[in-house]
Amino acid sequence: MAFQVSVIIPAYNEEAIIQGAVQAAHDILSAAAADYEIIVVNDGSSDATAEILNRSFASTQGIRIIHKEKNEGFGSAIRTGIAAADRQYILCIPADSPLTPALYTAFSTHAHRADVLVSYRRQKLGYSFIKLVNSYVYQRMISVLFGMRLRDYNWIHMYDRRIFRDGGISIRYDGIFMLAEILIKAKRGGFTFYEFEVEQTERLTGIATASRPAAILRTIRDLLSFRWHG
Image (cartoon, rainbow, N blue to C red; front, side, top):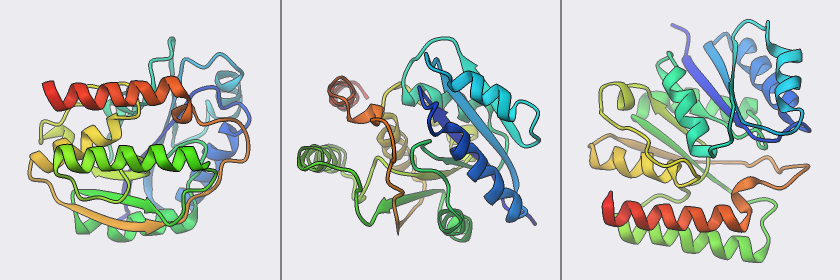
């Protein structure tokens, strides 16, 4: 039986890289003969992202494009994609680190091991010293405040769709904290985890939205809000 997966790619102002990211996922999944759909969520981009997606993929079988009128954040884009997904597994891929054959093989091979698959980066590429410190502090806060024991809460995860459909996990936050939110709720719900190491593809252009000061402050605010009001 073919591996069933919904690949969600959120995009906000990614005109320089979005076509390559979507095409890479499409080529890999086609070559693997997977039962797949690619759901690209354009999160209210103000650049040419929407035009590129419509021109390149509107009629491509296996690719669905969802355009949001307003930018609401990474978490909101992922939530939109999850709501639209209909395959057994849901794999969330950032546009700035496209799917690779090795990454696909790792997730498809380990899919049977747990309800939630969590990859962690061998090396965080493109991180300045300050970004590495911020990342370490954030990781430690989640581990200490929520009793989690994972190496990387902010990278690529894959979920068995039943944790949302049958397990009652809903996504509340619109920012990057959403990734940790799902993991914390999955742990509380008794779902199983499998964690493994992957190589990160370094972003070649632009600045990741999650690294901007406003996004960092929002992430910390959401984390503390969830801790106290969960």
